[in-house]
Amino acid sequence: EMQEMMKGFFEKVGRTVQPSPGPGGSSDIGNVNMKIPVFHPLIDITGNDPECVVHRREFEQLLHTPAAGKALHDGAAILMQLVVKLA
Image (cartoon, rainbow, N blue to C red):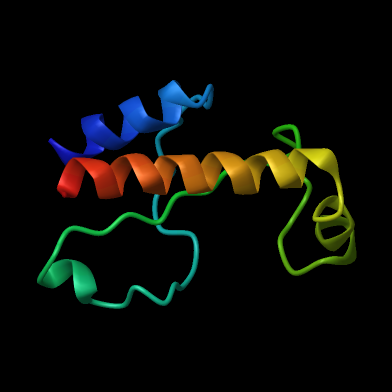
């Protein structure tokens, strides 16, 4: 199953996976998942701070930290694993 495969990719780069509490806003995915499988992960750079909200100044400041750089690297590694698996 796609969800388990993706969970394994996250765990391989040292990221834990938490189930989504449900839809949390819009995305650019739209109804693409009606035709092909999609995923829209969030990789934490806040240290699990529930008060930190995207599109606010505090979140923007976090984008300039080592945690954000690591999240970018981990996200690329996760995507690379998916591409290799699909190939």
